[in-house]
Image (spheres, one colour):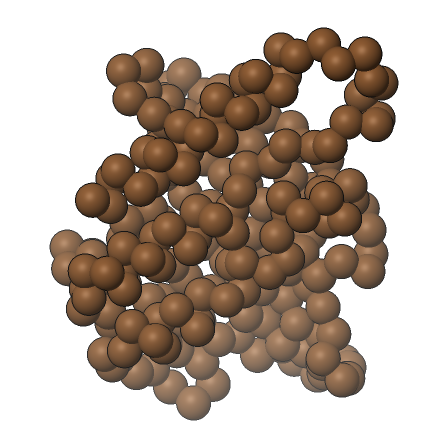
Amino acid sequence: MQFSICKQLLGGWLMASFLLGCKDSGKSPASEEKQYFPVADYVRSQLHVIDSLQLPVTLYRSGVNGSDTLLLSTKECLEMAAPFQDPDITDPAVAAKFTETSFADQSIPSVTFNYTTKDEKLPLKRVDVVLHPDPALAEKVRTIYMEKMYSSGDTLIEEKLFWNNDHYYQILRTSRIGSAPPTLSQVKVVWDPTE
């Protein structure tokens, strides 16, 4: 079931990208709507699988107050994944501020889509989506990596978010107040018992 949802999502996205890329609409490239990988939809599909199958979810966290391991409810797992879904780079207002590059790495094999912005006001700075190409089946997401930087009051917060398909997600957060030394916290949410 889990593979089927991801397969449908990726297959639809790749087909739409191909068809839009081949279509000659007579419009200039600047006036066409950008078609980026639907990261938020993909994350929602993964969370739907966790929720539907009621998979056991474990939280590993560490920070200035020490380390801890505990079981999470499905609801808590879904809530903690919110940073992966906001902002949505497929939203035309957000997509307009990002640039996409891509490259294929035959040594792994993989295809990477990289989205970056130069807009200082956006908290999301970078997204990398790594796909495993498969000529017989739909491409499968391997990983998603995101970088965010924003202020909350007088605190500068930097986040590095990592999603490992069908296994876990992880958030590394560095907080700095003025010239004080930064504090680092890490959470890792795992639903694959082999991790």
